[in-house]
Each structure stands twice: as C-alpha cells, then as structure tokens.
Amino acid sequence: MFETVRKGDIDAVKRIERRIGLDIQFLIDGNMKQNANFAAMKIFDEAAAIKMVTWLVGKGCQIKLTDDLNQTCLYYAARDGKTATVKCLLELGVDLHHVDMYG
Image 1 (spheres, helix red, strand yellow):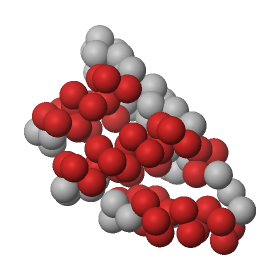
Image 2: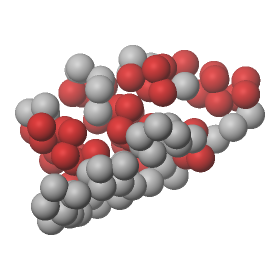
Image 3: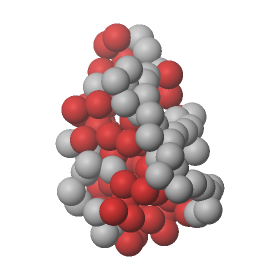
C-alpha cells in the first residue's frame, strides 16, 4: 500500500483499500512507525504529494504522527526542499516547533 502512495496514485490506493477492506488511516509501517503521510513525502512531484497528503488527512491519517526518530512529515519535506509541501503541512496543522530526538 505504501508503495502505491509513493507513486502518488490516489485512485490505485482507493482500489487497494476496497480490495483488502482496510482503511489506510490505520496502516503503520512497523519498522519506522510511519503512516501513509510519510510515504507521501517520497512523491517527487510536489503537486501530487500535496494532493495525496490532503486526501490522506481527509481520510483520517494523522498528520502529527512522529516516527521512530520522533520526526514528523514536516522534517522530511523540509529536508528535501519541498517548500510547497511544507506550506501545505503547516496549513494542515503540523507543529512547526516540534523537536525530534536530535533536538
């Protein structure tokens, strides 16, 4: 499922949801403790990433979730220079002042 999110194909994600009967908001990557919003940060096309994140948040995916390094999606978007995605995440409620495990 996360691989499909990384491709930015919302329709394919919806089809998988229907097929497996599981709402994407409840999926967590067990290794990194990341949800689908983290996978969306890997979408190269910023417009597609913003569309995916907005859709995921509308589906109930937690935007303030932190991973095993106590980092949010905002960290990954900022690290990769995705300024439009950063703006979108802030508008969706990600904490600008969140501190990760490195301070």
